[in-house]
Length: 175
View: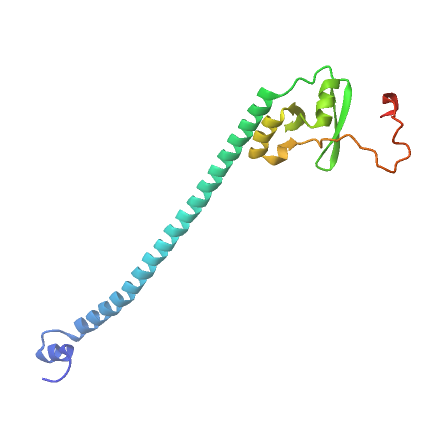
């Protein structure tokens, strides 16, 4: 017996031409349908992976925001708990905050400490508060932009060839 099974079944009369066409159509459909199912499954897998990646990114951003807020709250608490009292300040102290020159009024003792570098300035909102250097280092560890370390000025030593080295400038002339 030569020929395909389809031809053999047609010759034997077990199937009709219409049934053969229907079976061929179903076979083609199942082949194409399998490819479509595979493509749909692949697309669903890709969509799930993309959604998982978006969720991870969103979760990471939320976690960073929470850390930033906790950091800001810790800095605020450090400054408020450790700020030095500068009320009744009459002596102006000028310092640079970024590219702007700021001025705060402090007591003469605090002014001397600022000049020596034993007191630091910390930013709290729109205000500037005075804190000890150890507290300033804790703040700097969390956010370096919130601390302004004054430059400790060393007393000027006169040059060896300065003819006016022996003459001291009176305090009332320094401004």
